[in-house]
Length: 103
Image (cartoon, rainbow, N blue to C red; front, side, top):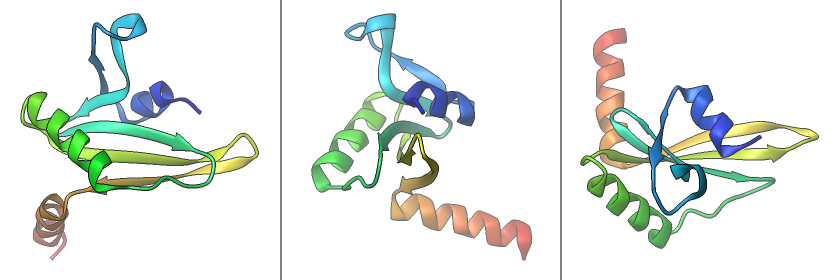
């Protein structure tokens, strides 16, 4: 797996960042309305206030988007488990939209 692969799988547009090689911010992409930060680990990843705060700040500074973590947990011998982490407000909005569409 690679963060670039995960962004392509979502059809997200990688975020440009002149400080990185190839001009792309590692693991960051835009999938409207989200700024996505991909985190890949074998077994686990801890979501902290610091991690969420940095992503939230980056999302606001990058077009006032919604922050989203895409956690891809797995290794070469284990199929990945993918989890989206979004804010409660966005989750409630998505739930409301789902209920409106599905009754």
